[in-house]
Amino acid sequence: MSRLDAKKSSLCTSEPLTKEAISCVLSVFSEIVKSCYGPTGRFKQLHNGMGGYVRTTSQSFTLLAGLCVTHPVLKLLTASVQSHLSLFGDCGLFTAILCCSLLEKIRALNVAPCTSIKICQHLLSLCTDYLSSEACGCRVPVDFGSSKIPLGLVRSVLTSKRACMLSRNEVDHISTLVLKAFVLTISPQNTETSVAFGKCLYIPVKDRRAMDSAVYPGLLIETPDLDLTTELPVRTAPSCAIKMALFSLSLSGDLSDTGEGTIFVHQRVFLQAEVLGQLLNLGRQMVDDGVSLVVCQKVIHPALKQYLKEKQVVAVERVGAAMMEPLKQITGSQPMPSLQFLSPACYGRLKDLRAESFASKRFLHLIPDDPVVCSLVLCSRNETAWEELRLACQTAEHVLQLTVSDPWVLLGGGCTETHLSSYIRHKSCAVTRSTLENLSCSRAEFQLVADSFCGSLESVSRCLEHDGGDVLTDTKWGHFWSVPPDLPSGSNWSDVVQRCGCGLCGPQQGLDWKILQCRSRPFPPQSCVGDSSVTSTNNPVLDCFAAKRNGLQVAVETASLLLDLSYIVEDRN
Image (tube, rainbow, N blue to C red):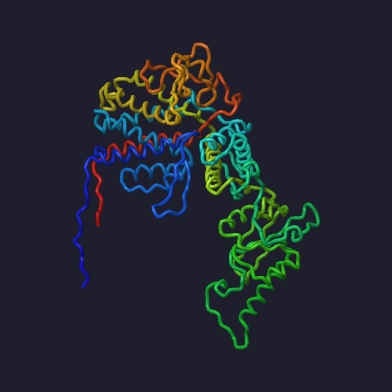
């Protein structure tokens, strides 16, 4: 008879945020994400205790997926950020830093958690209302009739991912390719209320310069075993479409691929020969139907491949499950359900077939009439840099799609955070008595929480400076300015600052600065978008409006949830 251990009682922890252990955990996590933030953020190497694969990154998506988080509070925080990233793709570090800073600053106040939460929610609504209003001074409209702002948005995403190891020229080149690929994936069947997007496939080429990267409309399929210079079909006329057959089942002749049911084999029947005969009959029917290209997700029998080659039909095998949906999109073909039922209605069509070679790789280039799918050949120096570059390009593609639905961008480089902070400080000074009554708080409590809220926004901007320089904000626009470290004493700030974080504003006569997070007289920040247009600025730093707005909401709501946490109950069995 087996022994049964007595069931252990659950572990209950009251007021978890007041415990020293969670304070240390949050502090370490906060330092990790802060040190990764921005174009000069520091790298992190992720690997397990057993050795194995080592990943170098500064991106939140990779960082959070690679961290082993055990404490329930930190699990909830990271899960909130990862949920935001799954929907919006960007601003993960911004969300994590802001949430940690809010927790740190508000826990230090002598204000009841329920009161702090109400005030934070009120300040959040002020921020989101301001960001959505016409009076917002850090929001810029996007006109997709010009490439200036979309290209600046893509460039800003790529420069913030430092582990991609790109030079300035390489960033410009990859940004252009990403924007071109995005335009190619916009479906022509769009309506006034909705936009459909195709797919961009990323083709890896290692040990090559990023400047060698290129984008192709349609689909590139790697074909190392085909001699495409002699095997491509010849079109009789430029307007003649190329017919294609697509198979998701195996054409290897294995009995396991014949489908479900019972197989009865008569005497003196050689089963393998019968199956091969069926495959060859299939090949003859496709040739009679005028098929010029056969693509199979799995394996094609060598005899069938040889027969198709003799009939000048290109046969491509082992393309994998991931390629099936793009193949259906660009050709209109449907995967053949069975060897017994070959329907001409399932055939797809292509505008052209070409052979492409890239480095030591050979590709078959499938060109459709309407290329809603494109292939971006990404070159990088090593595998780690390529993986970081692929994630960065996917993020840029995602924020462009979000910007089509919500055609605004925010000023980047820390300027939106400092501008919002200046706006909230100014609004907090004029809070009405009715607002205080609705929040059930005193004016002193409201001011304490508002200062902590604004200080948290400013702390995100401060994380952009990793080299020991001073961080300033001006008293006109409320933008972020960085000052080089080790300045001689008595230096005038106007002589050393060059451009603000977003790049729109430069030093001008009469402009005053103050050290960020130093107390000063509140002021209403002005808009610089009208004074200095984004389109006339070289390489403006921009952020995705939808991603940053949602990141702000997730950070405040997650911090509010954790501040309201009274008990953690853990099952120890």
